[in-house]
Image 1 (cartoon, rainbow, N blue to C red):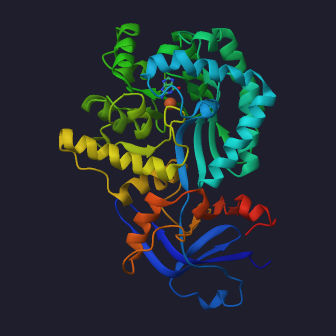
Image 2: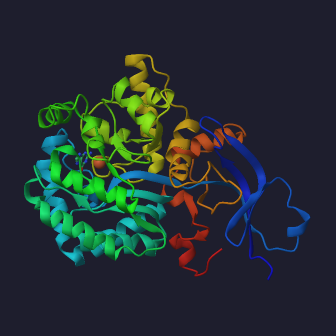
Image 3: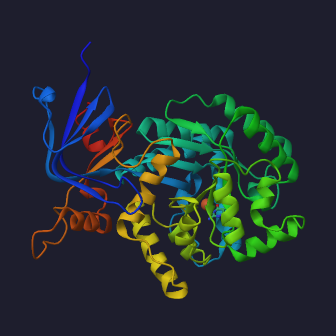
Length: 428
Ligand code: GUN
Ligand code: FE
């Protein structure tokens, strides 16, 4: 049977490696049966008879990957921003997350969240849910329905968690029940001890065993805030550094995602690079919660794999284009203080899009053999420039200036998933 061919035409821009920007004016991006065949300056003869989705002078760019956010904190976006981390958790966060015992509420909030992710061009995520198994399944259902791909974790928290605390036994039983219910094509489970202070040794050991026995990925928080780091030291006096509290229980392994790493020193960074643990940099959140500015350049130079996260709602912006520019700004503040080279626009965009793609087993950018995750950006609402811009300049402006209304189309796993298209029905 002949392959199902889809062709997108437009100005194709992507980052095939960290710091590299590749642009192709009026290029063709070809898919066969939902698999990228390549990007071509001239349409190959064999596709001459195939219909072309022509985006004209618009920009076709990779979609974003948000590698750390808390879905049940979406209702408190923009709240509690005058508090540092530990006070913010107790004053706002635990109460907000507890609302998700109510499944109707969860359904409403998560449907809206999933739609907003797609509208803002985020097609891949790694998320924290709340402690609730059922609401976590609702979240996974809503992501699947909207076309968001990735991983979601039921949060485990059996100590120091105020109104959101669960018993150790309930935490373990609910985790197993939740895993039994995870049957989604594009949304997979990830084990999620909230952070060391909120998990007993028994719970950590249980999760470590589960990770090994079922070959499940793990996510948590690491070295975000100085008070937190000091607390972890008191809780685990046998551990020289924060990361060892995860390693002790088998949670520090290839592919583990650790959010923040603001205060990870050279030794901790070395342990990340050596074990294949990822740092998820959440610049906006780190500034909001007065945590600091993470040593992104040093993480990269030390060989740590780095991706970006919105950390909603420590981060106040769900849109990853804003998280990308926040990470550039934070790196510039840090460069003034430490001399570390700031992130460039192509570097930060790579971390906000391609790095997540790589976490999920892909390459970087539009790679033959992979599914398409892409956005189409219209620059019509941007200020008129004084001269014709190069595609690299247009890319930079798009990263800084785009918003929901300038994202005309979103493709996730080779399906067109934006509501602009849904209003007319159909897939690419
Ligand atoms: N550490 C433990 N829980 C949280 C959380 O919800 N947000 C952030 N930013 N850090 C945490
Ligand atoms: Fe977080």
